Length: 305
Image (tube, rainbow, N blue to C red):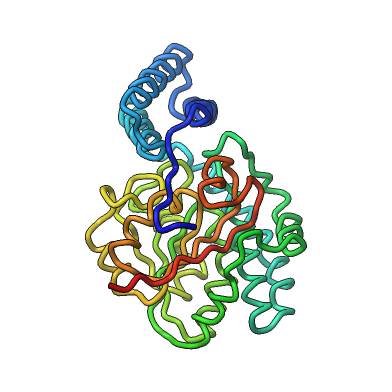
C-alpha cells in the first residue's frame, strides 16, 4: 500500500449509499410520506456530491448527518447494536476456547482472526449483510483462510521487541466484544492500551455506552475520537484524539472507514499503524491491493522526518 490511499468517487458508490438507506430510513420514519421525503433528500445530496466530486466517505457522512438531524433521531441503530452485542457475547466464549489453544505468534494470529470476525458486523456496505448467528463459523473460516494481506509478523515483532502505549481504534457495536481476546493478549504482552470509540454513533458505531460494563474497561482505558462520522476524518475528530495518536507507540485500526480516513492523521503523526479488517467493499479493497472477502492485517510503517 502506498503512502496515500485513494478511494475516489465512482458510480458504484451511489448504489452503495442508496442501498444502505433501505435499512436506515425505515429506522428514522414509520410514515411512508416521510420516508419518501428522506429518500428524495438522499438522492438530491448524491447528485450534488457527484457534481462536486466529493470523496465517498465525506459524501456519506454529510448525508447521514443531515438525515439524522432532519428526522430528529439520534441513535436509530440502537436495537441493532443491542442485538449485535448480545450475539457477540454469546459467541465469545466459544471463540476464546479456540484462541486459547495457541501460544506466541500463533495466538496473535488467532486473536486477529477473532477481531476480524467481529468486523463482519457491519450495516453500511451494500455488498455485505452480517449473519449474527454464524460468528463462530466465520472465525473458523478466517483461521482456515488466513490473511490475504498479512503483516502479522511485523506486528508480532513490534509487540514483543518493546513496550509502550497502544491506541486501538474500535469500529462497531458487537464487533468490539470480539476484540476482547486481542486486548487481553496485548495486556499480557505488557502494552498499555487505549480503546477509542466514536464520540457519537453513525450507523452501528460503538460508543462508550456500548463498551461500558464489558471486560474492555478492565483491559484498556476507554476514550473517544470526538467524531460523529464514519472512521476518523481529520476534520471531524477532536484535537485530543490527534494528540493521543501522536503520543502513542503503535496503532491498531479496525474497519474499512479508517482505511479511508486515518492515513491523513498517520501522515501527520508518523505512528506505526496496522489496519485490521474484513474487505467488504470491492472499491476500498482495490485501493489497498486486496479483493472483496479478503482478511486484512496491513502495516503502515513509522514515518520519520
